[in-house]
Length: 449
Ligand code: BGC
View 1: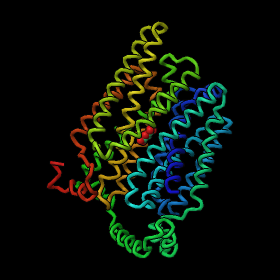
View 2: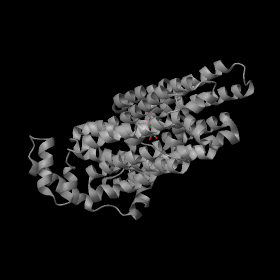
View 3: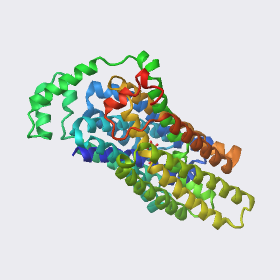
View 4: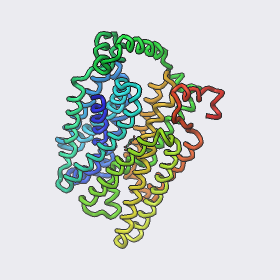
């Protein structure tokens, strides 16, 4: 059941990210939008998510993990309804922000719930399942978009995300909160019952004693001063750097504006655009994520990250060149460049999905010492949403101002920078215990780490 909760939460998150690609055309027709307003409608999900993620930790402490997930799902429903019935753009933008807020809250609360509920040997698996579920959600959104393409049904596309939100509520409702939170709140009897339900063979009192011990250790949480202090500077730079590079190399410009990009590249009907988006972006994203799930512990983080960045950088460079040709001979030879663009985007998505997509989150969750992890992960997550917002807010404007070729070359340039950043600064963490990773940041080891 914990697996089901995390699947639904991830899928919802993905659905809300992917769906806008197919909905934009209809929204533009109905409301006659400027480029900036298109960007606002697209990007305010990420802005909402930024605030949601910042608030989620507090909420999860106050009202518990389970109820926080229910709040997130309720926000999704309200936001989806606002979007579906929006009489004008103002309500639509509020709806987008509300949905995004739910996405942000869920993006923190669901993995937290799973990590605390899962037995230790399944914990790593749940992080991967979450990323996989996000990609499945994006894929499902593209399928819905494709099924409804050209039928002027953007309201249905957006409204449908209320369905998985309701399913999420149904899935979490009968569950208990995590034993860890219940112990923290002094509700020890309920904690014992919760533990008994997950691991009927284990002795709940022993487990509660373990929780007590680790809560004592955590009580000594680092202050914000320490989080930003000298000792944590290197892991913080690595965590925030990875979070930012994951976004400024362009992933969400492509996820959100896929249909438009295929439109620029010569796929002229909405059906053709939607089909290219569903299969070239959506399906490939899911499949390549499997590679990371299988190989991340075998090949290690760093080789996969670097290999992925080579693929991303080269394919973005090629996409830029294709657009240059498309610009030069508008009309003639469109199909060849269009097909090259499609192939290059497939390579880009596949390279992202087995590298920066899942592995950035793996590293962010393992490089910080226990005492600073909560706060440091929150900073990295906020940096990730903040840069996602920047990219989606300004992508179309950038295309207007400097053209598609230069925009994609800019993303390619950031991929090259990310390559240098990772090869010089990020240590390999495969197979290391969290304690070993922690010891990398002690002053004596700083230079070699
Ligand atoms: C990123 C999202 C992105 C998704 C695509 C995630 O790791 O954080 O911003 O949309 O991958 O699959």
